[in-house]
Length: 186
Length: 186
DNA sequence: TGTAGCATGTAAGCCGTTACATGATTGA
DNA sequence: TCAATCATGTAACGGCTTACATGCTACA
Image (cartoon, rainbow over the protein chains, first blue to last red):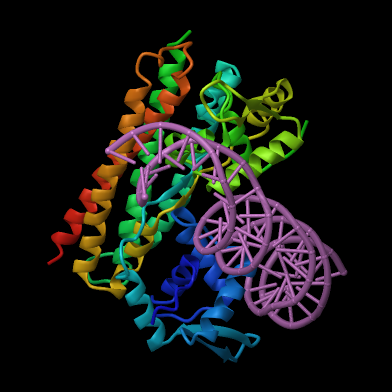
């Protein structure tokens, strides 16, 4: 109750609420498929240290997995206390406004320091990145098909993935528009 | 040449390229009107320590301002070396993809841990926040009118502000859409 | 007279990253 | 047999925040 961990801790804890038990390694992979797009995927080393902390607080439970055929590893499952804590975190006041670290917008802001060609290149590179990123997220989105209806496990992850796709589309529209405005300067 | 400072340092340096000389306090205010929306506005204490570092590297120049009528303070101006360094940073490889810390999307991802009403409230609160934020940015945008044409000082800041406004509009559209989808579940 | 804004910092501490270290298993 | 992947950490360090400290000026 009110353990007040860093948000990333709750984020990782949340990834353990989908009915399965993961190793630290697998948890990192899941983070790369989800958190990466609208939070940030913690480094491998942090995944382990967060898991250790969560275990210390009794929010996750480690257990050794000696399944025949595989080498023994440590898996983690969320505890009842973990679920309670997570729920109370979700209802704890306003979520807070998103923080954007947008190096493209930042460079564009001081575009007058460079030349017009530089700003145009900046935006075109961004459009390329967006396409790649959109593709990645789209693959994730497709992998949820069939379990994404109301009431199903991946309903919410699917909603969030759709959000992300719409966001990338919007960014691309905006970047193209600004690029056009820059080109009409000359 | 290749001093490799943190991005926030370059960001603050960039804010000194608009033809005026600022105190640390004023620089913080400018950051709140610009960086806040697509980077992050550093704490007051960090503004001072970054200025100290920039001065140490010769990228800004402090000087005392004893203008009659005001109490003496320290102002900073960008140096020639500072401009050079900033330009080379801007052209230094790809800008990097934006990192989003989106607590609303994060909470929505694990919406199944709470109840449907919680997710709906989350989104409605976000829509309120968006409106406030949009208003703030719109005030900033309006303050640039008249100096935002091609070739003028605030051309690029205006482009970035327009980007931000379009982004907020897009977020609101998406959030409303998801809210609608959630409501049609029941 | 008191409060809000202007102005400038120091210190402690957490979050998160990179670099480093180690070793088992699987498949080409 | 060699490389990639699985698997688990430790150590050092940087960035950034919060809390704290100080004092002046303008104005209600």
